[in-house]
Figure 1: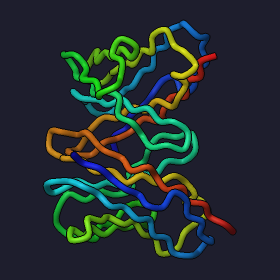
Figure 2: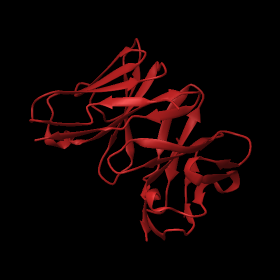
Figure 3: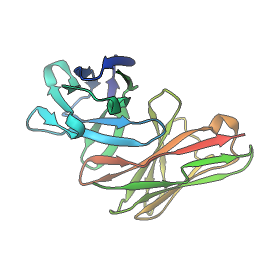
Figure 4: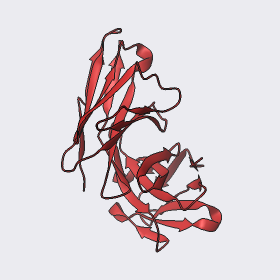
Length: 114
Length: 114
């Protein structure tokens, strides 16, 4: 069975500081990994995804994530956060192919202080 | 990117009534759509997979007679919450895969049952 763990429930970061959100997954084969962001009362927006190839992937809004198979991790980073980055962030894992089911982590709430 | 819409964005109903939520893929066709439920400060829970032209597949523990799903066309799936009760109050989100292996999410529907 596939599962995702996001160890940090809530992170507070100063505007302009760097941000790293942790994600650990459990999956028997090569995973399809995603990071989504959710603003209050909104749906989910795809930040980036990893299927194969280069283990460092670039996404929208200046985010990047690195896939580390040895650590079963897919951590999300941003060098300098903006106040608009305050949101809920979800890591998800899927089987890919014609099976589109995703398993989501519990989410990490990011608060940005001025 | 692919766009998924939901209607209505918010709905308030009385206990015992039924509520229908629509999910549409606006610029692509989707033979499969997914319905999620999200509780406050919680992750997304997959409820069911909506299949165009066949019955929906429900996740374990989800009452299929309570949450009726109809995939009427390649761009429309509906979720009907029948005989709604206050415990059905939640944020319902649909998604559809597009472009191969990536889920695109609707903006969600906030259901409040009085």
